[in-house]
Image (cartoon, rainbow over all chains, first blue to last red; front, side, top):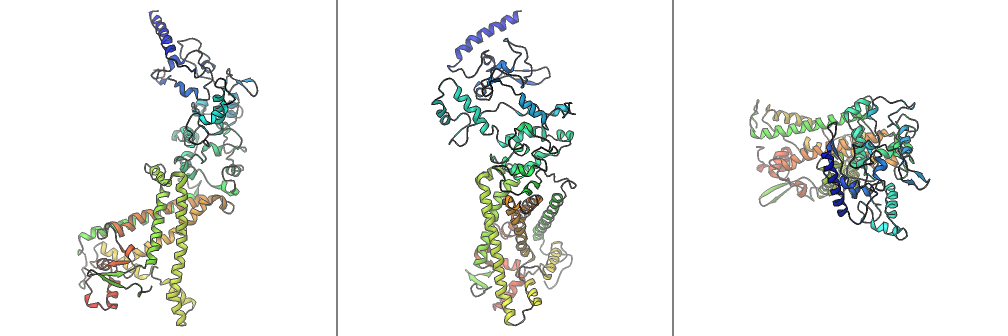
Length: 351
Length: 265
């Protein structure tokens, strides 16, 4: 009882202190004043499983994110009082309070969930049964963090965040509230990738680059083989114009949640569809069909799957090794010979 | 080769220098090594993209947006040099060998083939003998070092290596560069083959050039920091005796300096 009095007193103090420190601008919908506590960088605890959990929210970054306008308890439905019990996991498919403007419906990510169900990444098979090793299949947060909006790159000197020069045009007419800011970021984030290609590859590599995961699902090391291609090399050197995983693994016009197994007849990387995927606008438009016959994910240690690549590499390995071994040995022996210029088993007299 | 334009022996400050490479040849060599070094510096940061040095080196050449253009330009120049050099030795071959055969009315397929295969830079039986003798010397079986003539087996290897390397590397590079065009005519696996041919032959060439060739002309005790024949075209007497004793003896005799020939050691 004494303890709860102290907590309440502390809360009252925090409310008064917090309200004094709040700046003039209210950044996002925070009706419950959750940020009052969650603004503290050290707000954390060790949970029942021994995992370190950080509950700090950077309000500036959050307000620039896609969920910046969503109220906290739109997603965290179980929290209605402060202080609160440990929150339940968020269900991304529930309807939130945002009214989707084109259809005047409450917004939900259910359609994304439906897409994911059809993809290679679904936990369920076609009949709706849970797959083997279902816990390995991704859910929303395995790939998505809170992305920060990046500006349109064709505005000169643009930096991450909102381009003031671009948004100034919108604000000429849309003067009230934060409508222009929110609408601008909503649209521009979809015109440009939120993540760099390098970051996308890292997201996929969380599972696909994990050796134990590859073994469990009998998959090749597609991350290493991707980085052996010029696509991978360019991406690693910071190129933004080079394709990452999702560029080739979704059909043009589909969204990323519809990645299918290459064995599916409708998959972007199915043998029949591959050449179309390579030749989409902005990529190899003028290429022939044969370009798709290029082995992107070559595993050089597999002579049965990729015999040509395996034996050609073997040839060059022996050629390089043999040449260097011979010449470096000659150099070494010549250096040693200098110390004993006249030493010899058989001495020639005419010399 | 015109010996009148370049005297076979010149003397400067009491030292003798022996002619080896004409200005024309030295200029070709400068284009060759400039493009090869540029190609290495703009190519290997891609092959070894995950190494610590790859990013700073690549960024020095303008990063992913610029370095590929530099690489392709240097590659184009190198391929042009290859064609130019082929025409160069062909014209030399015609002037020095074919014309002679024509004048002597001895030109037939056999004599032509014989002339073709006995060119200065091609390996012959003597090179095999020299190699065996050199290995005997290195393993202390004999104390007689090889008396190399104008071109030793090592120099012939130095010459033949890029002459094999450029046709392997170059077209593979062009196929990777113009992949959209070639995909109309070649199967997809051709790009995998080109990739291996390009990067692994490049690795062999770079390792050989920067370790073996540079040892012979830069790092070895008598050359360090650098042999100057690639700039002056002339070799010092000591180097000449060390590397081409047979030619040294012959040149001295032919130039009437037989009495001044120094022993090999």
